[in-house]
Amino acid sequence: GESVGLHLPTLSVQEGDNSIINCAYSNSASDYFIWYKQESGKGPQFIIDIRSNMDKRQGQRVTVLLNKTVKHLSLQIAATQPGDSAVYFCAENILTGGGNKLTFGTGTQLKVEL
Amino acid sequence: EPEVTQTPSHQVTQMGQEVILRCVPISNHLYFYWYRQILGQKVEFLVSFYNNEISEKSEIFDDQFSVERPDGSNFTLKIRSTKLEDSAMYFCASSDISGTGGLGGANVLTFGAGSRLTVL
Image (cartoon, rainbow over all chains, first blue to last red; front, side):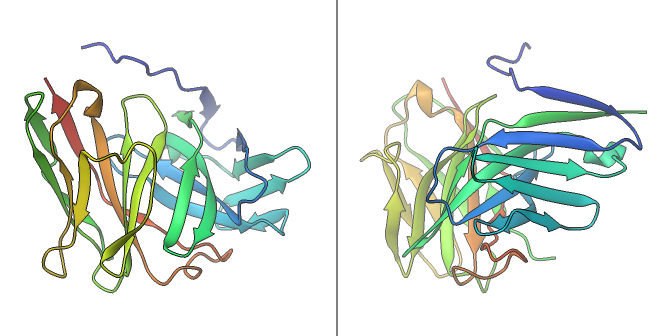
């Protein structure tokens, strides 16, 4: 059947190229920003996070950049692989007395072409 | 690697029926959450639960919704009288002590694979 309402921005990259996924956030009071990866039929999976007082963090093959001036977050994936194909969500994390409340962005579909 | 497990993976129900979605969080985690994702849309926060009580809930989490940790291992979401618009993927998540876990300092929520609810 046809999927209803599935209009995610899509980024197509060649295997081995670098990918840059962008996200705009809204809440200046967020404590952390997190990137999640969601593969088809699975729940969101943590990739990397960055504290609000930082502007760059690097992980294994991934780098997150935070620009608080324009409320912009980006995820860079180096040497993109077929296994990176998924929907990527940025999330704002606000620490509350009862845990963490995540506010997710709309997501970007990353397609890796062989 | 520890994981959050959810059952059922898919449930179809008639409008007005009660539904219970079940979750087994990671055993040493203290904070529990439900999120939902309507097809093609963003993941939305429903409720957080700590120390056997709701710590925060969203506007979506109205009187038709309730959560419970009945036996120290399961964490359930009940929808008392389902509506068509409740059709969504419901994700359970858990985390350890707030403020630790992520290398950047954020607490890492571990999500389950989700329970797809279809209301007819």
